[in-house]
Image 1 (tube, rainbow, N blue to C red):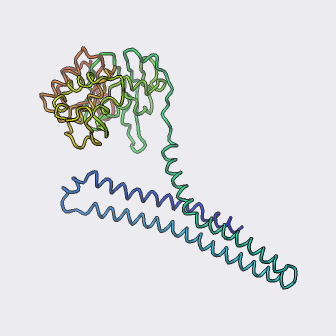
Image 2: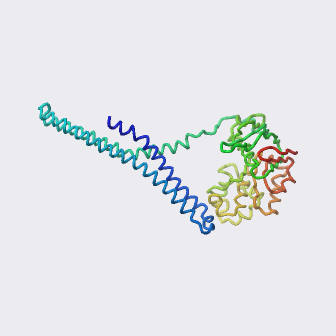
Image 3: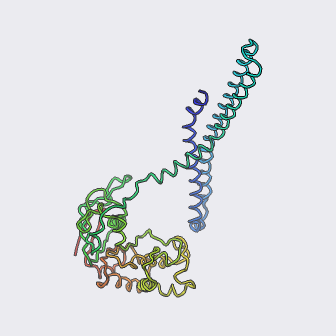
Length: 385
C-alpha cells in the first residue's frame, strides 16, 4: 500500500518534470548550435550580448526544470525513508510484543526480520532507480514525437505516369493554421507536355507554395491536382517525384561527394551523363579545378564553395535524369548574366524532353516561356498563353 501511494501521487509528475527538463536541455544545445552555425553574423553584429544573455536565460530555465524534477526525486526518497521507518518500527513493535507474549520465538522473529529487510531493500532499489526509469520513459516519449507522425503513403498508381505528364489544378487552396488568410486561393490552370510556364508575383504571393503543391511536397487544403486524369492523392508519390526534376530555393548540397549529390547513388547514371549535366550548367571549369574530380567531398549546405556553385550542383541534379517536368525556383540566383542567359537558353530549349515550371526574378525567362501565370496575394491575377 505504501509503495502504491508513493507511485500514485508522484510518478506522473516525475515523468512530466523529466520531459520538461529534457526539452529545456535540448533548447540550450540548439541555441549553442545556432550560434555556431551563424557565428559570422554574431561576430559582425557589433556590441551585443545576445548570444550569452539568451544562453543564460535558457540555462536558467533548464536549471529550474532540473530543480523541479529533483524535488520530485527528493519527495520520493523521503517517502521511501518514511516507508522504511514505518515498516521497521512496526516490525520491532509487533515482533517484540509477540516475543514477550511468547506467541513467537526468537528464531521466528529473526526470520521475519530478514524477510522484511529484504523487502525493504527491494523497495529502496525501486525508488532509487526511478530516475533511470524516468529517463527511459522520456526517451520513449521523445522518440514517439517522431515515429508517431503520419507516414507518407507508399501505395498508389504508377502505370499511367510512364508517359508524358499533364497536370491540371482545379480550384486549389492551401492554408496553414497560424495564418487567417489562405496562402493560395482557388488556383486553376493546366500544364501540358513541352510547355514552358513562368510563375510571377511579389514576395508572399504564394509562388513557392504552388511549386511545392505541384511537386507533391505538401497537399492542398481543398481543390484537386490532377495528373494524367488521376488525382495526385491516388498516385504513388515517390514514383511521381521520380519523374520530376526539382530545384527549390531551400535545397542545398548534403555532406558527400559531388557524384553522390548529383546522382543520389543511382547506379544507372554514368559519369558521361554527369559531366554533360555539369557542362550544361557551366560547372566544367569548377570540376577541372578539383583534384579528386567527382569524388570531391562537399560540406553541409555547400559551405566551402560559392553560393552560385552549390545552386548549379542542385540544378545539375534536377536535369541529370531528363525528367518529364522540370520545376525550378530561382535556380540562377546571383549567377552572372552572361552565364545565366546561356543556361536559361538551354533549360528552355524546345528539344529538351521536359515541361518547364519556373519561378525566377530574371526577366529573360519571359522570352522563352509560352505560358505566364501571375499571382497576387495567393490568387490568380492573370493566366496568359
